[in-house]
Image 1 (cartoon, rainbow, N blue to C red):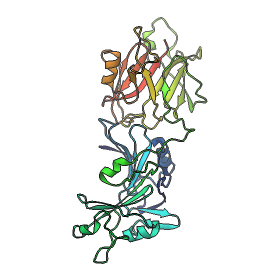
Image 2 (image 1 turned 45 degrees about the vertical axis):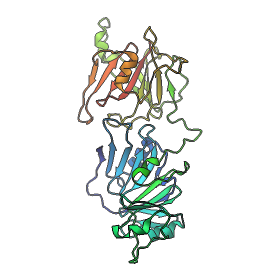
Image 3 (image 1 turned 180 degrees about the vertical axis):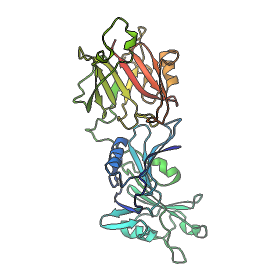
Length: 382
């Protein structure tokens, strides 16, 4: 698991922050189900508060493990489903660094210990929890919320499932202190905690009105997308050198312009003279790419080519398709080998993730990351 420091402001005063705890919903400005881009937007709005941020992901197989945004100074992190890039679980791993406010009461932080007795008094009665004998952890569950308590080895006999008396106190009069708090969606009826219980956290369903991660099918005719988020004037066409018949000065050759749809994960390039579409660019938004978090992930579906080499939708469920989860080796199995990369984009000081390779077919190009996953797909008009 790699971690990428996003920002660090030296000299920021250290101390526990206070965030509102919403069981089953979120904490502070972070809500379960929110896309990762919205989480970054919240972070960027409060740079003095979230001054140290780490992004962790599995570089070789980015769809295998969660994408994690971690706040080490504040003792919590956000776990995002790697495919949908939506928040599925919030974990407070150092309760002494983060003070939580529930209703009008505070718990956690350096001054308010989150003991078993304090948790029980604040959140009320609940059913006995579960005891993980291998980890020595007792987990107490509420709807959308769980608290994990380390149990000293001499008191493990007090914590067998269903046999513990609540609120939990040891024979010597002490009570355990929370070591981890989990906030998760409770609509699926699953209990989420540490270890294997962490994997049970699921992403809450999207609202009926949401268009996030709506499937984009590649067709000949595109429906209206609405007003773009931005319009970018393309300055120079780097491929114009191959058009020897055009003797106009290089700076006047490209009046093309992009419509950028950051919230849909795509760009559209228009011809500067005819104002007709020249190409679409679809973004997968994988961590480890220079454009990560610039676009929401585009949930595209591209169907195989016909004998003439054009890409189209077909009504055949057995037809192989290309999606954001398809790796480059699978693309070659579907479309055939196109040979060596035509263009290599060079890494720079502003792009610490290194270069990517671009492979081209008749009317489609794939930008491929070093882990074999597709960063962008460009569709050209024939």
